Amino acid sequence: VYVGLRSEDLGVAAGGKASIDVLTVRPDATVAPNTTVQLSLVKRDWNVTSEQGVDGEFYYNSSPSDTQISTMNVVTGKDGKTKGSFTIPSAGEYRIIAQATDDRGRTSESVWTLYAWGDTYVNWPRSNNDALDIVADKSSYNVGDTAHIVVKSPYQGKGVKALLTVEREQVISSTVYDVKSNAMKFDIPIRETSVPVVYASVTITKPRQGESFDAQGKDTGLPASKIGYIKL
Image (cartoon, rainbow, N blue to C red):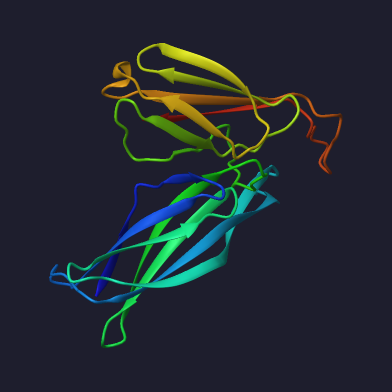
């Protein structure tokens, strides 16, 4: 038996609920009814270290660390479908893992990734360039919707600013925000002029933060900026 997952929720607020649709089918694509599926909510944290390369420069290395938050069992109906939901406790990256076992003891697994925004610091994976990873709360939008995006920023706090622009061939709108949390959400109204597509760009800058140097004499307090784009 195979288990599939689908959800409208790619992003939710910390403390909110994320729902998930579950489907079980046989290898021949026929429905597998009355199948027990174990759903697990797992929080993915990132351990970030700095390692020296063969060229003598130091590079970030990000490795995932998963913590199980909760589990539940659901049973699919005659149509092979059912639903589940989890409360997302805090900001960060999460995975919903579904496992189903057939009568011969063979287990299949599917994974759904989602993100939660909030006011707490999140240790996102770090890149070795100036690109930002941006995620949206849905895969598509209708006119009248509001898109919520989360920027995986390495910076937050005093003096950190974000420039959000909405673009298509030209800048449609621009707004500057104080980045109080590196897991904050940015809201983008979807208007008639957003059809068929717009792009959101986020540039985050941090000011100089003291006069500190690492063991190699690198100035770690330098001002810095990063930029990312997402298609909406």
